[in-house]
Length: 76
Image (cartoon, rainbow, N blue to C red; front, top):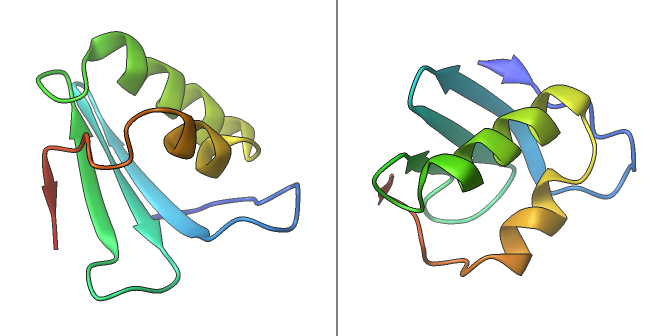
């Protein structure tokens, strides 16, 4: 897992893992903390933007809340 830089200082995200067609976002709290987003759900363009924001270290949590928060492939 890559630690999320959290440059804004107020994100609930602690880390992420990027693969070719997906990103797993790890949140600091919650019953299920790991969320998989992939090319099937929510789609390639959204996942590509999430990857960019994750690597930038800023804006990922806000972006996730602007898309349908329940639009993920899997959570655990």
